[in-house]
Length: 337
Image (cartoon, rainbow, N blue to C red; front, side, top):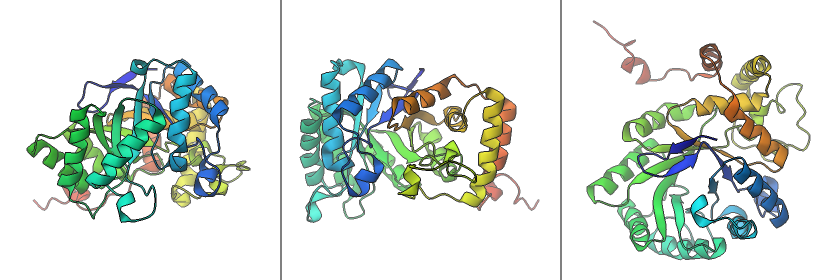
């Protein structure tokens, strides 16, 4: 397991990280995502640690706080030293009724950091991320609140998740101008079947030296091939929860190519999909959210796959985005000289 810097910071994270969204669900949405209890979580966290993973990601909203509780208890049960792991969580989603129990206001952030620290049973959060954009709160208020947490020692680093390119750039500019805690990472959806990030966000992150944490690298399991024509999707998550949205018309040829590349390397299509992400320069870490140790081990195996130039060309050809304006003009195809 190789280590990579997270953005323009001195924090090193494993190239694969563990997402705890499957911990603690009971019914409704979180029950569909995952119902792993404490014993199952302990087994997975230990397997992740044994594989060399050091970054564990959760959020206050996952299973209404149960994910944080279970992850924190796993670290205690396994006797994990605090400096051996990087713990990331998020704030933004509704944690109760009323307009002040959600969003990115100073009041909500200050309340939720205390609740997250309590549930995780930790003295500090390594990476505290805004789990969405809050149009009702001035960005200055949000970033100054996060800076307060960093200066107080409750939070070490600050990141964003699921923000548009203009929002990310505005936050970077405000933080820089006001000498606030910098944005070191963005957590976003990025896969071979969903390369939308490449239009605006990937160039922005590369230019500003912000790290990318990829969530749902297999597009909710779609890139495993089990949801494609002839696949065995029985019991799969996408049979109950159609998320993230996928253009299956574009996806089917990609699945065929993943299978061909996987056959060449003697591995599985899902491993090829993860290996492709690990070849993208802007990617700092890829979040995996296994429910079983065999799934985790398979995903970890992707770090040992070396895709060659031909593999990358073929995967790009079948998955690349159609060129939109101003992209075609920036590449010179719009020259009139």
